[in-house]
Amino acid sequence: MSEDWIVWGIVALSLAAGLVAGIFLAFSDFIMTSLANSKPAAGTEAMQIINRKVYGSIFMVLLVGLVPVSVAMALLGHFYLPGSVAVWLIAGAVLYIVGVMLVTGVCNVPMNMRLEAMPQAGAAAQAYWPEYVKTWVLWNHLRTLASFGTMACYVIAAVQLAKAV
Image (cartoon, rainbow, N blue to C red; front, side, top):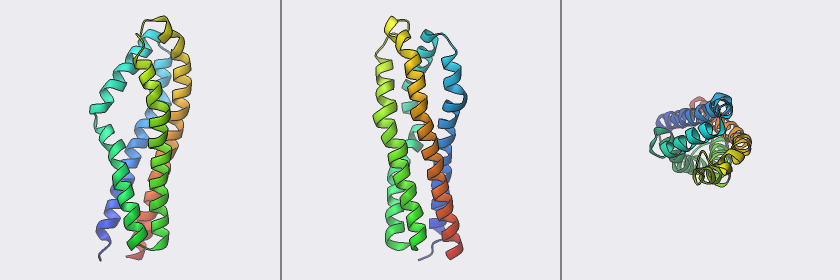
């Protein structure tokens, strides 16, 4: 079996993980800081809008689409590729599923849903906003690191497989 297409598939996976990491980094680096420096009602409203718009975005396709493709590539690696390549593919998939998707679903999304339920100018939203920003960003840092780590795992796997071909 020619593994050239697999190398390019892994490169595409690493690029997708890097794009996800870049979006998360932007939120951790300056987007949330900017929203935190605005008035609570304005920050809350902006974040509510972002949280509504994200579902129809290319980012969401990448975020969710990486799961089945990562699992498929990890299985392909496990059954058909050299051991070290398989290890990096499996590590990347596990890191992404746990560090990005699980954290997103268990931590960030519930916070977003709680924020969405609050009128942005209401007292509850204004009281919750500082806590939301602080905690949401901490979880987002973890997602950023996990998605960059996933990218690194896939780059290493691609390089190792390319050397073996």
